[in-house]
Image (tube, rainbow, N blue to C red; front, side, top):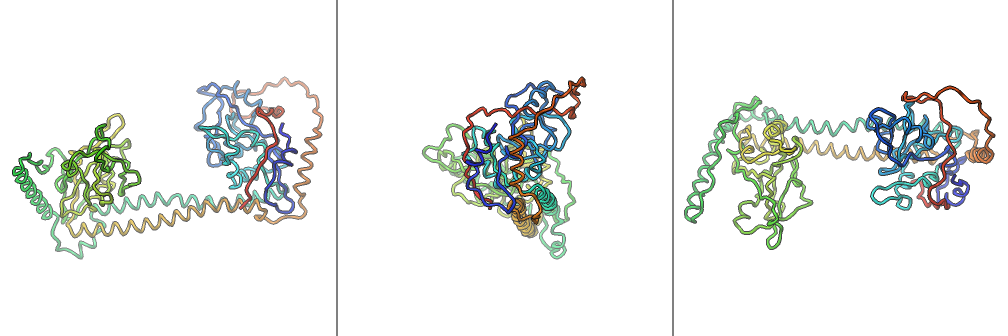
Length: 555
């Protein structure tokens, strides 16, 4: 067993002063014992006793749903060393270290690679100790590289768990602190729960704005005030005339230069349902995306494209998100000549559509290229759709990222080995609601204004969330400074309590000889049967030299 007196005299140094009646101690002095679960991996069974690991400790409770099961025999063997009782504290000691939980269940279970602080109600309140283990002070200690072991997965050895510093108040004051924390932290949790709803509300709000924009509901009042605008059907005729004129000019230019004729303008696939499940205003019309844009695939990534002499930046799926671009990590292609560059170079206003994704909900996510990088091209998993000159790119973006269009692209995408894919042909045939040009501009203005409001609310949410997250630690810090509840001069000082614990451990009462019982211990019931006597604390597997703890003060 760890010599707590040696650790107390040599280990508890450089700690902040405590309130009157409090005293610094270590976990092995105030807990009945400090242990850990089995380090071995028992054989798993379909029906048996839950085996709790660090991954099962979360949100102040034990997750029994995702535990593996072991035989009753293995459970009994593990319990000889690390039996768990109601009121004990469990804490993750490997991987994500921390997440202390007070055991409040009657279900029998075993533990693996989990710290076990055995309750000692005569010395320390289990909830008080759990709150201390959640404090910023202890978190900083547990994250100290000096105490962590392991290369790939960090863990804190048992010998350090036994000498964790604990500020010990009088027992009655512990109870008052726990009662006050229960009230205050409940209010904090209620605030957190309300705040956690805001991101979902904002997501639904943005989706509702896009849905209203693409059905004409967002600008119903604008149409009443502007009844004489050119209808979208006339706009579509002008777009098609412009497309045909451009094609004829390109054909003449290609003939003069001795090149192949360009591709013919897109023709709507007759098999495509030219209907939208939306009641559109009379001044709107429907068309296909290919009829109002020039759509093209990108460059396939091959070994020959490894940048050597003429590297050019290119966009890939990782750069394109729904409504925005992330240009933090740009890769480069080898472009062999100016014709290739002219073919695939992006222009401001181009729509970039994700062609393939493992998630059907992420397929077809779309953003606008604003020309932030000069001479940038795109990979073949990004489809470029370039609006013709009299079409608002932001209006098309609004529809392509709307709930209606997301459903359409989910239906269009085919799945091969879990990868949902679109093609240039499928993108061209997407049916688009087309508004009159002035109304497109008004829709874009209103959507941007509403999204800016949502962004401001989101920023306020982030600040409030950070404040609430800090509030919990501020309350805990105040509690462990002795400032949360009033002190009672009639309380027995913690030093007296600690001296009595040491005296009792130095002079344990002689065990009485018990009569042999013929009663059998229930097995496999899933509930706790006869309480098993805990064996003497196992010796350290490594050397037990005095451990020097240099810790920061409580802020």
